[in-house]
View 1: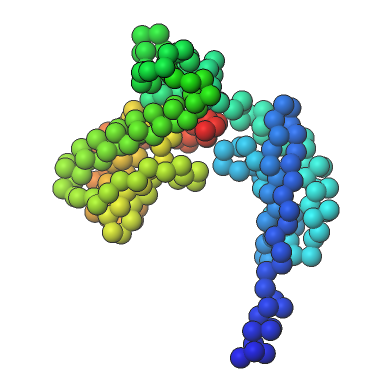
View 2 (view 1 turned 90 degrees about the vertical axis):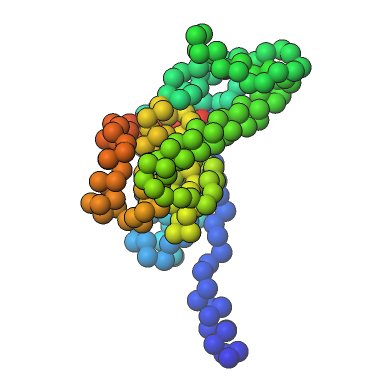
Length: 249
Ligand SMILES: [Zn+2]
């Protein structure tokens, strides 16, 4: 038993590599190195939001080599960051998409009040302490996402004759929503940044999974029967999905 444990320890994964950083324009991107036993060569890519660099490092390749590789890839990283566009801070002066429409963030110098959308002027007004604009706006967006997604989920659940157990709102980078076998729906709050019909489609899609936990023809028939904008929404997600990840909370 002890002998077995010793041999397991010898083959255990090597220590994680210390991360680094790279300055691109006026931005500093975190560089994260990940050891991968199956990797044949160094591979570099940006993370889902385009705000950091991920480097896959084969066993036997040193951190120094991985750093050199990152430095040689600078041109590629710059090009990707340029294509991604600037980051949107939740701060006064920045323009934020809300339900698919651009709104300028303004700080209101009043102690009281709630975050308010001025649709006519395309402005989001955030009252309170200037230091809390980002947090208050994040809370507002998550609450709005929960409200819209709950309404859409209830709507499709009643049309499709299914029930869900509960809805969770997260900041998922890799997916817009998910549905568990136990009937729990989970969505990305960033859907509130996308046009209404996109949020609506993601809800229809996840609610349809309460009936069919697959992507079979009968699943798609159910989605398309009740959600007529599905194709348009899928196109939007393909073309613009990454843009909502530019918003930094
Ligand atoms: Zn699905």
